[in-house]
Amino acid sequence: MLNSNEVPGIAENIRALLPPSLRHIDLRSFLSIPSTNSYLISLAESGEPGETAVVSKSQTAGRGRLGRSFYSPDSGLYISVLIRPDIPPEKAALLTPYTAVAVSEALEKISGKQTAVKWVNDILIDEKKVCGILTESRSCGPDLKYAVVGIGVNLYTPVSGFPEDIKNSAGTLFPKNSDGLFENCAAEIIRCFFSGLGNFSSETVFEKYKQKCITLKKNVSFYKNGEKITAFAEDIDRNFGLKVRLSDGSCLSVSSGEISIKL
Image 1 (cartoon, rainbow, N blue to C red):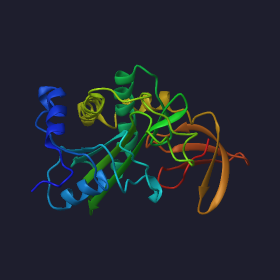
Image 2 (tube, one colour):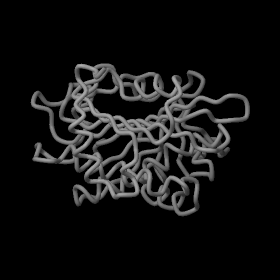
Image 3 (tube, helix red, strand yellow):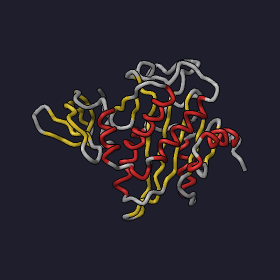
């Protein structure tokens, strides 16, 4: 039985825009859903195979990193992808920066605008956040059972504008909606994500990520174990950890699960 907000026709329109090699993907589409990630996690726990994607035009309980809510009005595009890659659990963390590179390329093709990445999971255009990424995974012993990668894009400006707390930092791909924008953007993101998935930890992805990362060579502030720390972002290591130099001259490599960066 279909969910009352499920609209299969949208999924079929997106599928028609995909290359033939990707049209086998199980694609589901909604007008609204509490959370695309939560929906796919429930399917994964029930045994849904990999290469499943869900798209929605809004979310009522969208989630971001570190337990934050993710503002998800109907002017956006919300995609989650379920994959079951044959990789060790510790490699799942690399899916977020890989996705940032893939989605950046997709958004640049759709909009013609240059994107940048704020370590580790935000995509910016003109210094405004247009996309956030959330990867959630589950392992069983030494094996990764599955990973769900969520992607939220601000396609155009909401009718009522952005909430006060994010209006100065949020950006959009376009100022207003246009015919086919949702479907074309969804198809391009899915294409870019799956096309390079077999090489998600490659040197090419690593170098592309570093080139796009605007966090490097800047002073950053972050909280670690409840303490606010200010440091200089020097580099990114091969595990996509941020290498920072503290005020006492010592160096530290921090992971995405430990901190929240403020530029």
